[in-house]
Length: 612
Ligand SMILES: Nc1nc2c(ncn2[C@@H]2O[C@H](COP(=O)(O)OP(=O)(O)OP(=O)(O)O)[C@@H](O)[C@H]2O)c(=O)[nH]1
Image (spheres, rainbow, N blue to C red):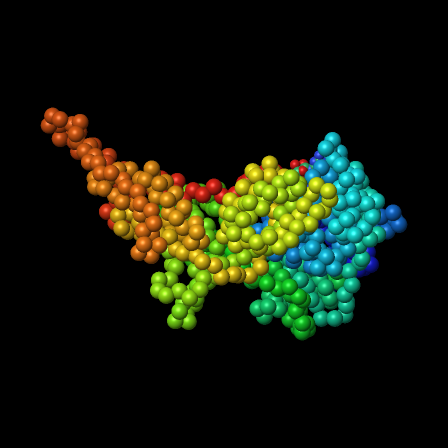
C-alpha cells in the first residue's frame, strides 16, 4: 500500500462549539459547512449533523458528531478544521466532556438576545478544566432583541477578556461566520503528539449503524492508525481489526489512516457500542501503548423506571427493542422485573429524565409498542443495622428490617436568573430541601445561585416549577456530587390491605403524608366501584397514614334483561368477560389498566425543558 500523506498537524485545528440549549450551535455548524463548501447547497438541510429523527424533531443534539471542514484562511493555506458537535442537555454531559477532551479549543456561543445561561457556564468550566482555548462569540445578532453591547461585557467578565474580543455572528444569515473561522485558525493551537510513539486514540463517540455495525469516532493523540491493523481497547484489552478507517467530511469518506491530531472514524465489525466505549483508549495490538489516556468512566444511570407493555403479549417485543437500543446507547441498562399490578416488564436505568423520555418515545415509535412507565426514582443506598447494605433501584424492593441509615444522591445545581426572582427561587429550593451555597451577580440584574439539592427533588418537575415561577427566565444546570444521609421512608399504597407495588415510593418523611393523601385520592377517583367496599390506604410499614374508601356496588348486567331471552343474556355476559380482560386483579380488586396509566402519568419534563 502506498504510504499515505499524513495531514500536517500544524494545519489541523480541532474545536467544538459549546452553548446553552437553543443558542444556535447546530445552526452555526450548518453555516460553517455551507460557507466552506463542505456541503454543497443542494445537499444542505437544517441541523445537518443531527442524524437521529428524534434529534431533528425536538431540535436537540443527543449524540456528539464530528465533521471535517477544509478551510482556506487569510494566510492562503488550507487548514483542516475538525468540528465536534456536542450535545447540550445536562443528561448528556459525559459526552460533552469526552468531546471537549478531543479538542484544543472551543467556540463559546451565547445568544445575543438572552445572554449567559446555566449551561453556558457549566460548559465553560468544563472547557477550562480541559485547558481549551476559548473563543467567545455572540450569536443571533440579526435579532431585533439582540443586545450585543450588554452581553459582550457580561461574557468578557466571566472569561476574563476584553468586550471587544467577543465576536459577533448570525448563524442564520452567515454574517461574521468567516471571520470566526479565521479566528479559529489564528487562536486555537494545533494539536501536538508524538508521531513515532505507539498509537493512542481516544474514543469520543460510538454509534451503531444497521449496515456497518459500530462506527467509532476517535481522535488520534500519538502515533497513527491504519486499515487492516489490529487494535486493542485499553480498558477491556479486547482486540479487533480495523476494517475501515475514514473521516466525516461530512459524509463518511474512507482514508488510508489517521495520524497525530486527526479526528475520524473506524469500523471494526463489533456489533455493540459497549465494546467500543466512549472515553476508552485505542492502541495498536503489535505495539501497544502503556498508559491509557485520561478520562474513561462508565456512564452511570441516575434515574430508574419500570417499563411495561400494555399488551402482555408485547413483552418479547419490548425485550428485543431494548436490546437493539442498547447497541447504540451504552448508558441504557435494563433487567427483567415483575410487578403484581403491571405484569412482566423491565426496570430500566437512564442518565436522566430526558434520556428516559427519548428512550420511551423511540420504543413506542420505532417498535410500535404501547408502554406504561412507573414513576421514575433515583438510586438509594440503605445500610442495615446488621451491617448489610442494599442498593435500591425500585421502591418496592426497599428492604424490610432494622435500617441504620439511608443515603440519597445529591446534585450541585446552578440557577441563573434575572435578580427579580431571587425570592421565588429561594422559596422553591427551600421546599425541595435545598441548601444555598453561594450567590453572585453576573451583571446588575442577573444573578447566579448555587445550591446543593437531593437529586430526587430536582429530576422530576423542578425545572417546570422554576420556569413558571420565573416566567421562563431562569435556567438550570446540575451535576451529581455524591450522596448524603436523609430521613426517607417508603410509602406503600394498599388496596384492600394488599400493597400495589407499582405505587410504592421512597419519599422524605416530611412529604410522606402529602404523597399518601394525594395518591389515595387519585386512586379513589380512578378505580370503579366494586361489589364490595374497597379501602385504599397509604402506609409506612404497618402504620396507615391516609385512607379513602370506594363504596360497594353490585353491577348486575342482567338487570335490564327481564324476559327470558337466554341468548341475549349470554351475549351480555360475554361482553362483560371481555371487559374484564383489560382489568388487572389486585387481590380481589379489579383495577382497569387505565387507572394505572393515569395514576402513574407523572408529567415528565423533557418536553418542557426545551420550552423557554
Ligand atoms: N434569528 C436567528 N435565529 C437563530 C440563529 N441561530 C440559530 N437560530 C435559531 O435558534 C434555534 C436554536 O438553534 P439550534 O442550532 O437548533 O440550537 P442548538 O444550540 O444546536 O440546540 P441543541 O442542539 O438543542 O443544543 C433555531 O430555531 C434556530 O433557527 C441566528 O443567528 N439568528
